[in-house]
Length: 189
Image (tube, rainbow, N blue to C red; front, top):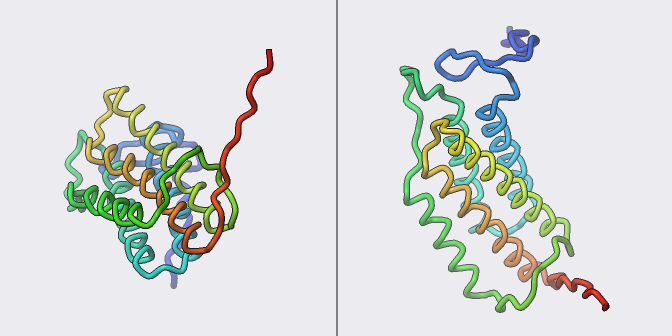
């Protein structure tokens, strides 16, 4: 018999962190790892849409790293869980930086702000970037509220949003799609 997916333990609006501590489902820690999970789903869609083997490999690595981040955020930092939770490393940030630098070598200089769009794949990358920035804001909010969060998580999520922006430009180039320049209206006196 298959294990039931529902437990009914959250029906009252609470959930448990790894370590057993019960918190409301709208607790900032839950909001944070829930947004990381949402980001991971968007990264999966980006990977499915973009037919580029090198990017695909890194996107899968990113998804694994986001699971690591989610696991870390889901732990009660004041309790010993007795579990071995994988950790993020500085080399994970460096891997994103290397990929950004490599893609930038083939991209034209940016002369204007770029509007999201032009191709569903490019748009999906921009959506992932926006969700990533929201995750970063929640991480920073946790830090400001003095709730424990590994500083490397904030650094990684920050760099990941940069990576997703450059990936959107790189995808547009590979797909032969023109970037959409933003042309703001100027006020007339």
